[in-house]
Image (cartoon, rainbow, N blue to C red; front, side, top):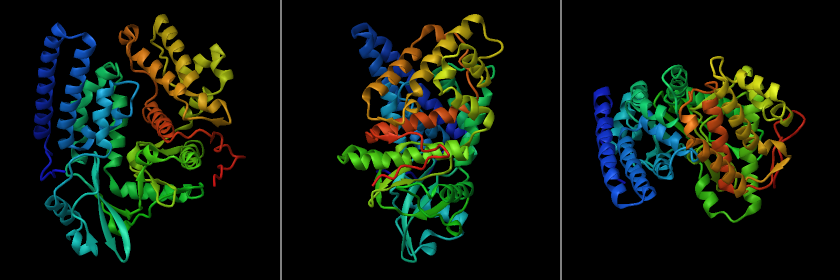
Length: 443
């Protein structure tokens, strides 16, 4: 893969790249209007989506940083954006152009005052993996194989300006109005800043390992403070396959359930017992090791949940609360889904909408064992998401709905559900997080 010798870091350089991408999108729309004359609307729209998705991704991949991270986040919203965008943006999870060897050495000299070869016994200058915020190299020191994650230059400094540039697109995509929208963008900005603080990530990683090491069939790499800085992290290299690659080739149903149970237990313990969880559940952050265990990586994005959100959120998983109109509506107000300035029509619309959504979304919690391989469940989720994304009545209403905590909570659950479905895990014990229960031990 072609390497990158420099990354635009100034506001002007990055804004120029965004404007160039915008110009390409504008040309695509002109072509689309012409295509509609000679082609069916659906075919013309599909061609437009593919052209726009390709041009937007090509523009963002060289900027890297938060602009590309937003694409990565959108790639997980399979029920919200067109498939062409999902396919293209999902490349940001694994496949982006890496930094050149010269730029890698320069980064080490800036933060360690030494070259990689002065720190490690062996260091591969060619990146093994690259994503939105950093890339991973393989190294060796004192007989140990190590993974060294290097943050792309200028990522942390450009977060605010990058978000300002992608904000108009995001607001249109999610039907967010100007009034009250800042709280949502502030939440994303804070989490992105956390992800660029590698010293914080090392501490969060060590804390999570200590708290979750008891969960069966789950393991973590060791992290090395003395070999890490605010822009470089060193951890153990664990031999394995990304969970998506494993799922695509695996034919062992028992093993799929073992890995799936470990993943489910990991998230349920964090959410319900720690009230703080790994909020970036995309396939690039999980491996299946050669000794057939789940490996959790990348603890830069951790989300804490206050009780004021946790309690009403999970109370809505109980059928008796969803089926009690007065209780249900009160919970929607607590979660800021319903607002004091809503019209009667908005109250009725969003009450009915979230009753349907929650009735489907909480299905896994209504049984002791759940089958995440059930295509019917995911088809219903997709169809319901598509229905509301095309709803003209919804487009005319204020889309600023819900507490800011929904952003990463819902992202995490959708990501978790998709990973479980990818694994075809079909015998998952759901309630292992309850105090009197212990995680299932799958041989």
